[in-house]
Image (cartoon, rainbow, N blue to C red; front, side):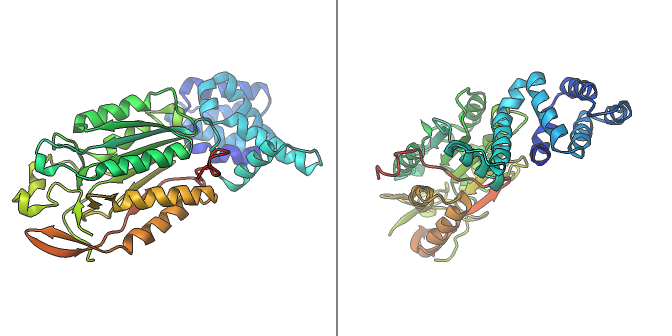
Length: 386
């Protein structure tokens, strides 16, 4: 029903509709006899902020039913075409119409059935060609040579293979400073090649404050993710933004083969002292408050993240393997990540700290504000190539 669709889009519409668009829609809906003059006065009270004007408009139309809601959504195309396209409203309305036609006995195509199914099940659209951009950042060579991340090139190979298989355009960047990472994310947020989804994979040293650049300064995770929220990246409104972060988040070891830690102090006997104290003291902010984000940390807060010099990191190796396998079977990302958590947490190793070897264990940690089911649907023909 269109009224349910309008409700589902409420957050994005409130966030992105300008005051001018709101007023134009109110005038249009008065002309269509959807709204009355008294209702418009209440919606557009000058003492209220723009966001309340948007909420009032949406809620006033939604309660009038599916016909009124569909009229508002179609009018949005004439008033703000960019927002209409970014929210994929045309496809949502087509899915609704195809569903109604099916119930009345009209034959529908397989594409229409898929769109209807996605709308009914609350699944993110994932059929653009390419699916979207996958940006990989790999920091291997640091200002202090002893801190180089041997084996991280294996992570790059695994990530490139997995996301090309899933139909993404993959862009890889090597050895960036903290400021270069921040600048790069801002540049990609303005890219015109975004499809149905954006993916960013970062493999580097880290600490509780964020991700460490090759200049050994810290880039807060919010500087990686915030360029893609609804305010800064309108082309990804309503679409999933996925971040996989391979980096330490502290200096503790989860108890319980030779591995390294992706922290600047992983080999403490070679490094000396407490190396995290060398880095900028950035507030710990790592989870986006906006909708449609999935941020997966390779380890829980306060702990090491483990990497093998020959095979790459535990997390990335497991993620790429299960992501390809699970996606071929149509599994949603949260189910896949649960499998990854079980796989990684069952592994055991040892790590050398202060010339002593201790048992090493770890488990990844996802955070998400997803509103729908996210399935990385494999492009046709890909699943048969493996």
